[in-house]
Length: 249
View (cartoon, rainbow, N blue to C red):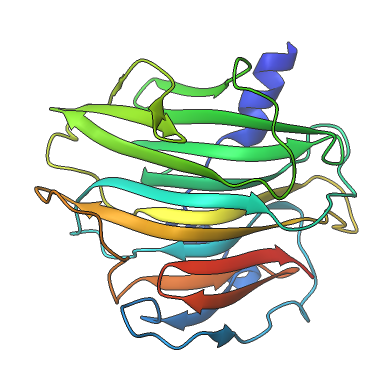
């Protein structure tokens, strides 16, 4: 298996919704409907007393209603602490995306592996018969603490653009039957844990977290029905309706 194939296998996004359905016992739902305008800030219930499980872990926010349709999702992200504990192709990444990770989706990420000595922008998408993870090797080097905006948006028909720091960084991706938007916008920390104990360390702060509802022209907050979730071993702190931090325990 080539290095690129290994990365694609390791980094493939699974939506938070699908993780909840398949492995509910390893995911803690912190609180529903806490991300609308006027939501109180503060430390949420700490889920990190449970044992960490191998595989993918998440800490972030997702709209959970299948009938919702969105033309975009965006967030500004910055690493908040040093990264450690990563081996092989394990990673800790900040992800902004939309869609069902098992069928149709598109996402952009800022992630690290090799214990944070290399931070990488990437994007990925999934559609029937075609799932791809694509590192953006031409993006300038970045460092922990520096802020960068991540966004995916529908630009025409069923075509979606990937944007970093306000600039389109790839050719539009065609996702069939997405001309009226996609459900399940999500913004979260994603981590892979291949060994035991799960010792990946790292974190991000997410700000200006926004969604673009289908047919609208202005960005807004996640719907009130959205849920904030954290896998065992990770915690979230809500700062405002558009800002939160997610990190390892």
